[in-house]
Structure formats: C-alpha cells, structure tokens
Length: 198
Image (tube, rainbow, N blue to C red; front, side, top):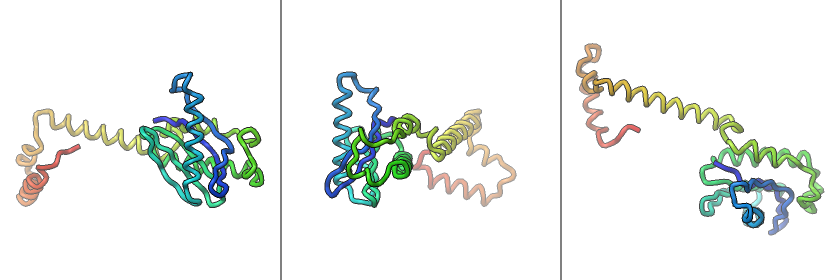
C-alpha cells in the first residue's frame, strides 16, 4: 500500500487550478521522477475538471487508483495511490486535508493561487503519515487487529482438529448433545458440504 500524490486544487468553471501538492516518487527511477510527477499533476487536474461539485469518486488507471473529492465550495483534493490502498482511508485523508486547508488559507486566494504563492505546509506531513493506513486511521488499525484475531482463532481450531479428533467424531461421542441436536448437526453438515471453511 502506497500513496504517491496528494493535491489540493480549485475548480473554476471547467478548469482546475493546482493550489498545492505533495509527491512521493521515490519508488520510481530517478530519471522518471519528474515525468511521473507531471503526469500525476495532469491526471489530478483532469479528474477534478470532470467531477461534479459535491462529489467523491475513485478512478482506476492500470494499477493505480485516483481518489477525488470536490467540495461544494469548489475546493478539491486528489489522492493517487496503488490499488491496494483502502478507499475509506483515502477519503478520510482528503476530507481532513481540505478542512485544514480551508481554515489556514484565505478563500480569496483560492481562485488566483498557485503552488508558489499558497502558504500551506501540511501536505508533506499528511502524505508521509498516511503511507501506513493502519497507523494513521484508527478504524484500519482495529480492522487489522480483528483480522489477526480471526487468523489466530482459525489456526487454533485447525490445531485442535489435527490432534486426531474430527468434529464429527466428537459430536457422535458427546453425551451432552441430545438426539435432535446430533440429527440437526448431521443435516446441517450435509447441506453445507459443498462449501469450504475459510
């Protein structure tokens, strides 16, 4: 999972003006970096120009995903990431950056601004902090912990069953289960026999 670009733009009619951007092109060849950065800027502007005000969208281009959020006040943000990066975290980042930007940069500067004139230094920090979505986003961290717990629980069940006892044998030997419960288990087992446990 990797973030490559984080941009703030202003949409004027059918044009998008780049206000500020941060890039992480370290994974590209040194000689390709400037071209890749220019292409990311071009793609960000194009996506904002073709998005309606008040909309959010994700556009797939080869192995990359471009997440765009255009607010009703024409302020827009674009995140370019690989296809594995969680969309929910990308949109959370965009919302946070746009809120912060609108508080720090006066609205009068948006239509006439450029990356050289806009005084906002938060993009580089956000880009590096959100490289690992599990650390930056509490929900992703909780989801990762749940996934780990599920894997541990699944492995524990497998190790219990590998000790020479099958669940079917345990059910048939059980004195606690009634006749109806055993019949229900056998019927359910037959019904679910087409599906594998993950």
